[in-house]
Length: 294
Image (cartoon, rainbow, N blue to C red):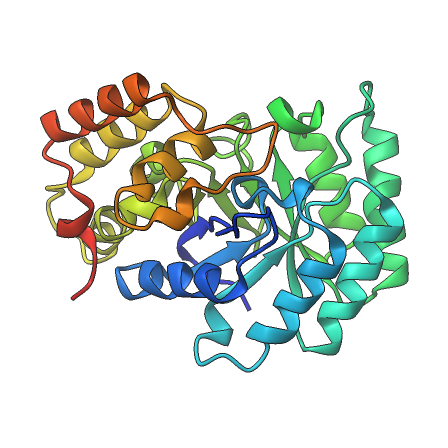
């Protein structure tokens, strides 16, 4: 079960034909966990989940079910279809996965509190033992959770709605619910969130800032003076200047060429933009090799 900590919305590694490279995706997650993460979420938006087929997701779930890091592996669904969400959750539950990061359906504009409530209600009715982390990301879903909407879901489904990834940043500072996990979606908000009682973060960029973010987390937990938070924030803000999936795949492709594979309509950064990104990170003395576990 998910608990307080530093998590990545893990990247998906692809083959040249655009199919999911299961082994490389697992290896990337393993490396990130060894380098400091408490766990990873597969098939979030950073993992291009909306662009990956249900069959590939199922094959991946079966593969990781008995992995040695199984208790640190969590799943997003990344589906618009209600029935696809239910189908994938039921399948994963057969392998004893219980915690899921679930965003309201995107594509159709005009999501309402009532409609989003019904979406989660139907998922819970079909999978009563599911544990859901709400994914609050208006930029992608077109819907921004209000404190009132989250509170209602928690009140009606206290055993099922266990937390929130807040990538719209309108909740993590003010929403306080008992026994509820709140994760800002950026490590730039990590320390502030921890000071306000949040549970850590679930972030795209912790795919590469894992050890920095873990240092900030551990120093807070151990009441030590912060020495890495300023660098962590500046690195995150640098990546935020670009499309995060494009920037992360471009950055990591220097170390592993398989990260050059990406699903349209997403594209890698241009050579010029990639050089610009690397130059900015060098100025911040951020080097991936320094942040990887031996």
